Image (cartoon, rainbow, N blue to C red; front, top):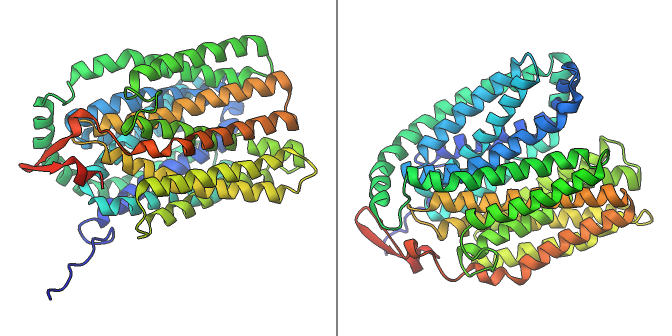
Length: 485
């Protein structure tokens, strides 16, 4: 009997550079995400521009939403390398702009570029994984991505505070360049290899009936990407002014939510709102899970502070729990358990639903907070199980003609739903006050979103996009059934 060939490994010579550089990029982005929240208040105080805090916080969100839609079309047209390169360069320019800023206009410009870079990198790295990694290694790669957020979540705010106090907030941004350079040097050989293999396939896919239309595709997406970005921007700014001016802020929330809905209909796969089987249901699941975890988690530090008397430092335990438990769930899904993706997705959504039901007890002062936090930890494990599976299902429902658009659509669904949910919950807090009943309503709403995902999880397997019925790769046709494994 011939010996079995060794199983592929992320740490083999062929895949190690990609694994190391991709994880380093994600870790760098996570540190930047956590660092900005810590350094931004000091930055606006130094410029005597506290009123511009909301603008600086909302600018990257708007740019990120627009970038996702455009990066998807670009990646389908030219492969993952050009948008990824552009994203890394844009990230570097953004850090320099903010780190050398002489006033808030330059800071806002840098923050806009930062959001643009995040969208380009997110879509580019996902399509790069689809092109460069075997299917059996992708769950492990996504598990490493989740683990990449643990260190930034635990020590990021502390380190940022030390750097800000010792050297100034500028070095929080400029210091990222010292990490970006070696990461880029490791990534360059991988990009050269992938670029040479995708040039032919990108040209062929553009010529096929289902392929993207290049500039025409970008022009078709651009107006709706702008509407989505403007709506997300309005929702974010409204959240900053709800306490001071609730009536106009609520009006902006309503208009922004309507804009998000209209843009989503145009930018997301047809049938997403009807939970059509296959990719549309996968994209809808992104919205359910993002709403359940993202929109609830944002309020937990405030809840713990007001309801249970936690200090600002100890209230951050909810953020730490999210990062650690998410990584644990992602590690579990990457194990060789033999369960199909839909089963793992159901398990994750069930854990999220149950965990959020228990976490709702945090809204009652008489209940020990440890009980509710245990529920939140379970919800974090569930998100760690579900999120990578949704990424795998997105790639399985895609081919070289639509990987970028599908990846961008899935992330766009999560971003828009979170922005809308945060704005609506913010309006509730402004109108009803930050009391136990309001927080309970937010937690219950998150649980309902997770439950809706659980009840519709079976629809993620089914119909495929017409262009993805079969894919030509190196003159070999791969049946759809084999790729949906």
